[in-house]
Image 1 (cartoon, rainbow over the protein chains, first blue to last red):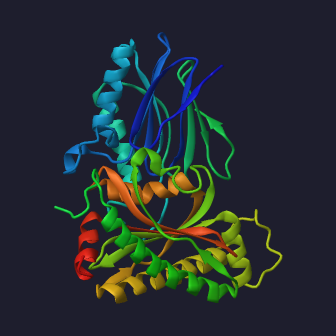
Image 2 (image 1 turned 180 degrees about the vertical axis):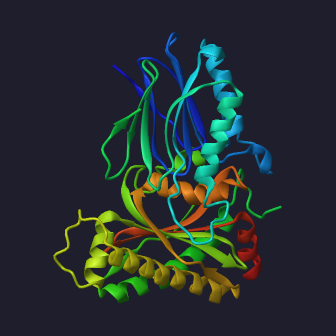
Length: 161
Length: 203
C-alpha cells in the first residue's frame, strides 16, 4: 500500500519509497523534489519566495528557496540519503494573474524558479527535469522509488517528467 | 508594532474586522444581486488567521476549479482583494449578464465573457471597498482587475505570497455568499493597513 503524504505551502516532508509525496494546486510557488534512488529517500519542499535575505520577517525557513533547500538536504542526509547522490526535479513558478505594471510580487513565480535553480546548482544537485512557468496551476505527485514526477493541470493532459 | 499579534489572542480586533467585512460584503452582494436580478445570500464574514500550509485548502479545497478576479488595493489601505467564484457560478453569471441562457457550464470562457467577469469583479470589489472607505474615511482604490480560472490553491498562492513577504501567517477577511451564485470575497490588507483601519474608527 503506497501512502501519499500531502505537503502544504511553506512546508516540507520526507518519505521513503514506495511511499510518495504530493502538493496540490501549486501556483507561483515552486515544488522542489529531491531523491536518492539507492536508499529510496525522497523529499518535497513547497517554497513561496526566492530569498530569505531580502525579507525582514524570515523565521519560517520553509518559506524561502535558499533556506528550505538547505533544510531539505539536511533532513534527507539524516535519513540516510548522501548529498552526493541527490537528484532534483522541480515544478511550479507560474504567473497566475497578468498585470500591466509588472511589480516584483507579480513576477514572483519566475524569481522563485531562478532562485531554486541557482541554489541547487550551488549545492551541486543536478536538475533532471522541470516543468515551470506558464500561467496555470499544477498538482504534483512525486515517487522517490523511481524519481517519477506526475503533473496535473486544468485543461491539459497529465504528464510525467 | 502592529495591534494584531499573529501568534496571540485577537478576538476583540477580529470582531471589529468582521463588522468591517460585513459592511463591505453587504454592499458588494447587493450590487451583485441587482446586476443578476436574483437573490444572493451572504454569510457572516470570517476573519481567518491561517498557517501557510493550510492556505491552499482553506477555500473550497486545493483542486476546486474557481474563477478568481484579483485586484490590488491602493491608497491609505494597501493589500489585495479577491472575488472568487465557483466555476458553475462564473458560467451562470456571464450567461445572465450576456443574455446567453443556454450556456454550457463546461465551455471555456470567451474573451467577451472574461472581459464581462473582470468588469463584474471591478464593480463588486469597488462596492465593497467604497463601503469601507465611507465608514473609515480612508482613501481606498482598487487597481485594474485580472482574472484567472484555475485550482483554488494556485489562485490563493498569490495573496499568500504577498502577505508572506511580511508575515509568517496569512490574515484575511472572508465572506461566503451563495444562492444564485456561490463564491467568496476576500480582503487581504497588508499588516500595517490593519492598524490604519483600527485607528480610523477609534479602536
